[in-house]
Each structure stands twice: as structure tokens, then as C-alpha cells.
Image (spheres, helix red, strand yellow):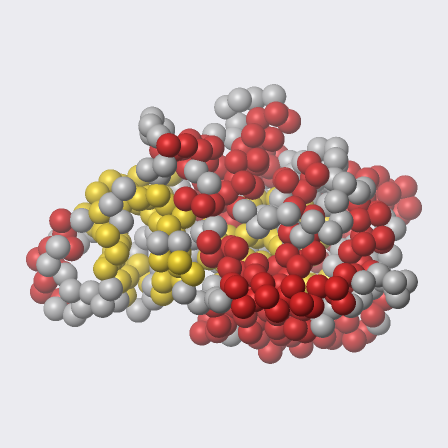
Length: 459
């Protein structure tokens, strides 16, 4: 904790926001998770000015005060890989293997997408994420100008990329670059951007190499699906003699800052390749989808962590995962890692919280700005109510947060000191209006009688 009441009183300037009386999740110098009780968070000019005691701020003026007694303050959660507008397809393609899911339902429906469909889907997704304590998300989709507009209006933070396939020709890659340059630093700095080639099986080596050149030239990261499952890795080895990760190495993608979506197909031979990558490399894991598609294996979180690769938590799109619940991703990641490693001591609850906070922030390139509640960090904060019967009693606060708390326990969501949800009331999105208009548009959106699809899934 920092600062005394006298230091605050002498300053004489009101803070923008004070959150008081809560328990705050903090990181020590070795990044170990800890908790400060009966604490207060002082926010000024969009950043955390201090984490101090509740007593220290009793005489401090503030434009707004939140009494958070009985609640836990966490860094805002980061959804490190999703396709936000795909909430419009939630439940449409169920109980299908991956190839049929893409070719028979999702890619034919996406041939119908309009900018307004994307905008409405993004609005509904952002409402869901704000209610679940997500303050930042990494999105990889189409018509991303509409998503950028939604982010700017609703107050969230996002890493956005316009997805493209090689089947679009040069204009797909060029459009991804134009989007990234147009929106970089948008929404007062809350929007960061990336180049977004879809995957090594839909983007050829020439386009990947050109993307890597553009990323280096313009100082942009790359957000790409890679080694999503073991079948993709086996198919790549059979056809090309290299894994998807090795494709990214030979095309120069791993010489850039890159966020790899899923990686459940990462194999032993990939680990030294990733460890030797010249750029900042991270992986986003979305375990619910892997279970639903019956993929063998999962993201090798432990092996990646041992070689210094940050692994952030994600949900993927709601068309495959059915929700944008990062709390569930955190719990599933911890449980599946215990099961796959055969070690109940891995992942611990504190390790899972580390992935949900600092590691997720690093995965999306924001490790110096968000991911912890500390002086100088952006004031992205969520308040979690643990007074429900399903979270009591609390013997181990970290375990309660990971394995007992739910997204619905988030009471308040704050980005840069601005309250986006207070006591479960959304303040920046009219959900009922969004749902009404989206419902009217759904019949045209889900029509597949045209027989077209935007791409073929054939790994």
C-alpha cells in the first residue's frame, strides 16, 4: 500500500474515483498473487494513483466513490481471443465435428453478414463481456470497422484485427493492414490493432511472409489461429513435412509480435521453435471449445510457461463456445491442466489467477498497461461480490475466485476509471434494443439456401 492520509489531504485535488472497503488482488515484485484487505483504490486521470488503506482515503475528495465492502477488486479480465459478432450464431451449429461446423453451417452463414449484423453482434457480445467482468478483448473477424465503433462507444478496451484469407487475393491482406493503421490508437488509446491472417491452412506462405514484412514495417502485431488442434498438425506434417508452428517460423511470422489462437496442436518439436522466436510470442487458450469439438489434447500451458511463453485465457467465439465467460475459461484451464498433467498441484488457483491477469495482459501486448491494480496502471477494475451461498465460506480466497465464483458475481466493471456497469446495471449499451433488432435480422442472416460459403475448411 502507499500514501498516508496527510499526503492525500495536502494534495487538495479531488480524485476521479475512489473504490473503498474492498479486498484488492495485488502482485508482489515476483508477480505472486496476494490480497490486501480493507483497502482502497484511488483513480486519477484514468490510471490507478494508489492502492492504500480504506482509512487513508476517508478525508479525500472524489468525483465519485464506490463503497465496495464485502467485494473483491480484480484487474479487469482479458478475453485473449474471440470473434465477438459471432454471438449472433450462438447455438446454431451444435454437436458437429470441426469440418462440418465450418463448411455446412458457419461459413455459409457468414456469407450473409452485413456490417449491421456485425455491429449488433458486437454490441451483444460487449454487453455479455462487461457483465462478466471482461474489460478488454482480442477480436479477429470481418467488418471490423463496426466492431471498432462499438468498442469506442461502449467504453471497453480491445485489440482488433480484420481477418483475411488468401482466397481473397491481395485485397484481403491490404484491407487488414488498412484497418490496423486506421484504428491504431483509436478510442482515446483503448483500441490497439493487429494484422489478422486467418490461419496457416487458409493463408498461403507467400501471404504469411508478406504479412510478416508488413508487421515489421509498421510495428504491428499479428493475431492468427495456429496449431488449433492435433489433426491440423498431423495434416500439415503429412502434406508439407512441417508443423503449423514451423510454417510460421519459415514465413517470418515468429519474427514479429504474434498472438497464437488455441495451440492445442503444439507438439514437442514446436517448443524450441517458439522459445527461439525473435518476436514476442503468446498463446490464447479457450478450453471449452476443445472439449465441445472432442479435440484430443489441449493447449500445453505448463510446457509453454516453462519456456517463457505467456498463455492468456480466451473463449473463442460464442458460435463454438456458446458463451464469452472468461471465469469459466479460468476454471476449465486449471482443471484440464490438472487432468492432462496428472498433477493436482498444477495449475493452482493462484497460478490460474496469474494467467487471468498479467499473463493475459501480456498476451495481447498490454502487459505494461493493464493486468494488475497498481500505481500507474490503467484503471481497469472489476468488483466481485462473494457473499452468495455458492462462494461461502471463504477458506482460500484464490480458490473461491477460480472455482466457486461466477461471471454473475461481478457487480461493477470499470475501464480507465469509467464505470461501465454498476451493481449489475449496464450503463453504456441498451441490450433490449440490440436484441430486438438482431432478432428481426436473424432469418436473413442464418439462411443457407444460397449454397455459398466464404471459405472451405480442409486442413
